[in-house]
Image 1 (cartoon, helix red, strand yellow):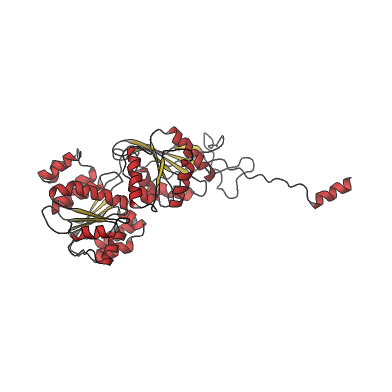
Image 2 (tube, helix red, strand yellow):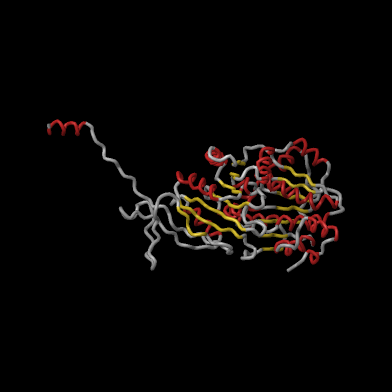
Length: 442
């Protein structure tokens, strides 16, 4: 296994790495840093929490230390991720004379304009805010020599393709391109082909050693049962919890329902201003609030150690978001838990997409009404096995088997769906004909 001394880094950088508490390079750092130091284009695929940020910050700072001018541009999908990346650049770059400016939505345009005018060495920005500055004439990208796409898959999912095109058109073609992504979706590969020149590819395969130790569970239950299940989980789980919902409206709805019963709940979504969002994250980190409710966009920027449990209150729209959601727990060698609430039939396609992404193929147990036979709107009963089909018992939500623990592709075993019972149609009494019958009987 490589050590920091093996990566051709200066003594000053080695000291900074030691002060930061990095004992030895991760797999992605060991493989990526030498390519970046050579000035090559690099295309990296590695899972969340594998150390991607340091794998480009350390060698880029090493390459450009001692130079004057704005040579480095790092694009991030969200404000929170941009701030975290900027903080890492600051930690390694400032002691070596490199200044960093972070440009994000929600911050003051005049303050950012003044900072950009001071010719910082490094710009970290979200695509939308950087395009805003370009349109205002606040910044020029003529001298950029290193362009970094951080979380490229997420930027494209968020619809930043047009802004990325605008930005890359204003940067010299003779530059170094570094692209980092948790997954290599087709659109990421398309972007890589359009901007990169013979990139070195670094793919860190998932392994038992590198995969976070996350116990995953699946609950099949209906919408009206979700809040009760979440309350029970919050009661049973003593640690911190992040709850992911599908929209900002949904986040507020879940927060309002929980807030009436618990006083340690806070939420974060895109309608909050920057100060409110930073305050919410800070109070969650400090322990003032034990439960944080967030959307996917906000969740990608949450970097909090020791999160005990992640709850997917809603199945994510994109299968890749499942990976990023549960990646908030089980970080830095610690174990964690992830629970997903899925609505029968409605969410089955989303669960299938997650299985496909993780290379899992597992047959699902289907709904079955023993009194009336198979429902017309439900799949047929699964074949009989030696142990017999799994039959739900009791009422309310029931957990599925653990979805795989510590394996490279935790298996989503779709079992124990709540029993679907056809509604009972009450017979109406009274009315004109009933009155006529009673009249003749009398």
